[in-house]
Length: 226
Image (cartoon, rainbow, N blue to C red; front, top):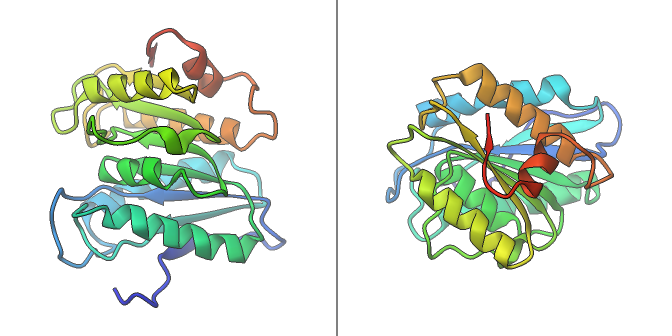
């Protein structure tokens, strides 16, 4: 993808001005400079996630996804793409608040991109959270990680550690454990989708302390069991 190609793909634009937005970020590989394509399995897996969010979002919420240049994380390329998409979205919506929903590598990119001033919340699905990744960028957002306890690709323990480090730094972060959940979110897929849509809807509310799964996860001493 050329640098002048927008990293933002709009899937649904409200007829009137958008008051908020939801962006999805799909998974990928640790290292790859191959061009990312929209028909990759990882990209297609996020379509039902976005549809679930669309079913509960208000009519004035813009729905979209981040377009990657490469299939791999490399040196943080997807996070850079996410920040570019957020810049484009900021111009399009005059700075409307955004909730990022990322899966695996896309979750890592979403957590990094939380530094963007328009980001209100991050939903990280089966996230890739290496212990060296920072948490300071989460100081103005609510962050909820959902991780299956049967994930064999990314470590559930790393999500536990990430939330612990974020909370120790004073961030609003929580963890939802999906019992029996796998990395591809195939087992209990309906529960993954419903929980994601619920958390996204709660993050889009003006009141950040409103009840629901997001508030419960951020307040719980450990992981909330789904």
